[in-house]
Length: 279
Length: 310
Image (cartoon, rainbow over the protein chains, first blue to last red):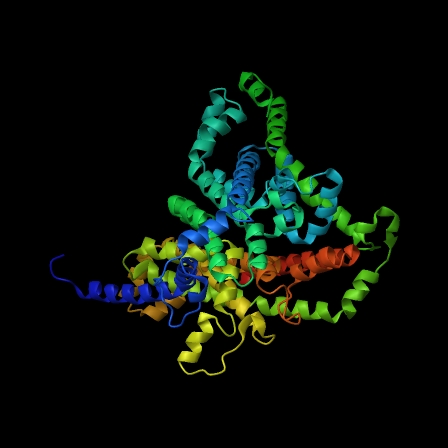
């Protein structure tokens, strides 16, 4: 590696060009962060001062987090909804995925087709009936209702099924010969083998639930039950012209997810890759 | 699930195949039961209600007494509704985000896959918009696209464009602006999936092509493109269905405006149901949405045999 070879030079040049593209691509994020640190009057100064001359970060973020619409409360709501949805959804999907891939029962094929068919029904198409159903079941304007809504995921079932199909039947047959039932095979053998897939789906479900705007918008009414995305929108409407505050709110809405993503990055990317290729 | 431990006690050797099969069936049903129950309550049953509402004229605020049958009026009205026509057209135009996004993503995937250092960094960077909340992202773009003060137009004025477009405030530009943002959001996802597809292509194919004297473009056309077609197919299907489901971006960014120029189907349905409280009519829109997605999926499944090489 002492003397640089020609391909390395080419690779370096391409890397630098791509780095430029990448920065351009992420510019909206840099602008958002920068604006959230500034005084309102400096937000639109042009040419853009990426690093503010005068900082107002503490004030901006304090107003967002502990002001009239306290983000700490919306955070708690969102964490609650996202965590519980993820747990329930992963459990239900993993069970169903195992049933559809490793249990050999005649009805299974047909049931799986029915489940897959519902994947073609966009949730939005049944929003109105769901809304009416929720009003009559008392699930409207509750966190429980919101959690249940996203917990029966065909996508999750489909994705995990693909991974279960990859588990060799030999393991399962030999466990059966040793006298193990399906539930035991599921928890002891199959589940550990697809752990990366479970992690991937869990992280994705968490991200999707965290970012969900449409369902909270329709199924929640009371301000103190709002999730972050709903609060974010309301905050924007109320603070109309205070762009520094709005950007501080946007940073607050995005940052925790970025952290989850960076921690679970390998799982997310590998999982999406695998699911996509197998898809 | 409770019955599962019982299965353990059976010795497979002694049990008759019939009984074994019954137990296997029971286990199967128990495993899939929660999922089936959930789907029945939250998807299948609502579809039934939707079928009924399709033929109803109802404002649900007024309660069940005001429920009236409307026959096929809702669908007849859809045919005459110019706002719905506009919405439908917008959806068709919006679909073009999918191939554009896929092309950019494939290009990026090829470059990042083989020709750069810091591969993981690039993956994360391009993936960021996809995992960021649509609400926050939409709000940021709203400000960036601000007609007078926004950085985008300030920049355009600086490089000499004295009369830059008003982006999301201009009926002629709004849909395009939303489409650009939508592509920006989806590139990361498409790119990651493509990269995985690229890595699954056997290296020796390229090597033997090189021995035969194939150039980069030939290799791309004869090896990469055909072998990556399952991935392309997957992205196309999920992408197009995704455009039909788009709501968050529209709801936060434009609310279907200005002048209905960015109204997509889900937004129009939302507006009809929850702002104008016309439940039957909204239900009919939902049905059209459902059928559209169904048809597109079926057409694509049928078409894939012709151009997808597994």
